[in-house]
Image 1: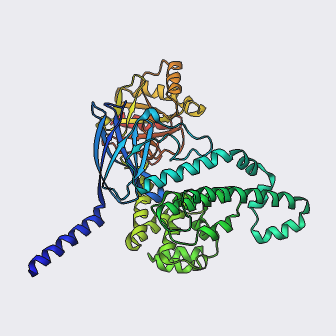
Image 2: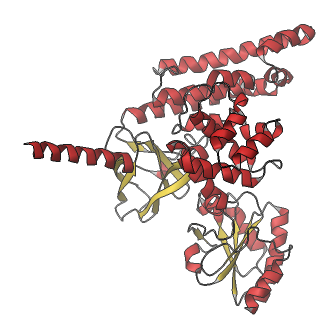
Image 3: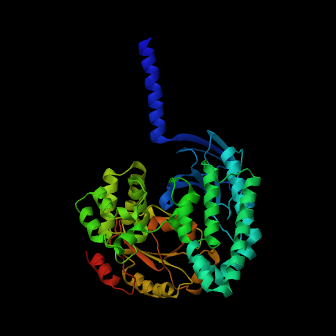
Length: 498
């Protein structure tokens, strides 16, 4: 009897551990009329804080338009199904199985004002569960509110009083308005209009029984939609932080993370502009993050160490682009959090470190599949075994178009031993088509970059033009690959010579 109880307890424990490690398994059975034989891509957020996407699975829809897949994930995770450029989105909730109908002919046109992920081109029919019903309702309210109130919101944003109001805290407003009696009426009137708009959005939420004061997933999403609206309509940054940025961190809520990234202060910048900079760096290089945090504790009067780690991580991305913050300091902070930080923060730090090496020497970009002008498919992995020079451009970017003339010369000189690929990042296929029609002498491989919505993440594209030189193992050869006008010729000569 005792052994039986022990076996039962062991099985329950294994099931619990398995669930904690691997999450739940969700079955998705679907039909995609009109997309027979097309590729279906299943995406999710690899880690919400950096909003980096990962491909869960790719499969072909069968000849009947049906598909079936299994997803290992956690409850309340957003799943994106993609066929071509059309997205269908839903949340994994209480159900273990989802039946979906993904008809791309019913894809919604972009909503003119919000253009959010939720409302742009998404369409999916499914046997819904509670969270998807509520999220659909919330996103519909959000879209309808902005669509209906666009003229008034625009007027408030365009008002000269708006900038004045947003730059003043509530206390300073009283003093400033006393000095500016001529503007006092305008500010009060505009504030009143903004409050009425905020109240009307709240009323729409309550009509659907969505309460922004609760702590469930839907309520949190609604609360930070409200926060973004308040910010948009003129609430001072300090007031926004005091109202919305003091509580729990909701690391898997998309609305919260978007708000957090917009409104939490960049602590790294504050540190490096403060008198505590040297103390912080000294402790940092003793490999003691806790001691370094203590040196700057006045910047965090009420936060716990877990939150401080998170706030430091929040400043890293922007910190990389600030000239007064050495990248090595960023690297040390990441390594220290990875070594001894809290579990959630370790996950974020790991993701940041992975993002840092993208586009750098030794990095192997993830595979992508793009179409040429004749609709033929080309994969990055098919070029293994040869040197590849990739030029990323847009037809509207004069500089990058001019560089294609230089690529033409390079291809003529080295094309027998080095593969040249140009990727057009235009939104519309017609622009890509017209560019090549106007440049018929360009006889190397041109691909349409918009065919892979994750291409920017895979190559870490930050601008156009941008260039990559890959070795036969698929690794990027240079931290910064030169453009055709910046001396890449010497590097290519050495490759050919060797």
